[in-house]
Image (cartoon, rainbow, N blue to C red):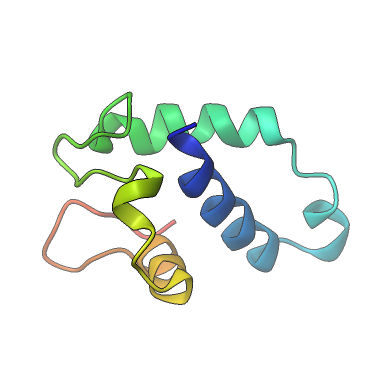
Length: 84
């Protein structure tokens, strides 16, 4: 599924930012909705791109997960990508 890469990156990011008790209770369905609703508003509802770039697995597979995580957490200054 296209959202799995974004979902796993987001889940990892949220788990690192969340208190330990909360990190254990992250709901995969809620994360999927979050990716589609929040990320999809810029990256397209199918995650193929829109205002933001394509974030499907085949597009992101060559990127370092730590860099993607940094972009998700810190955003991209000078662009529409906000910090999460």
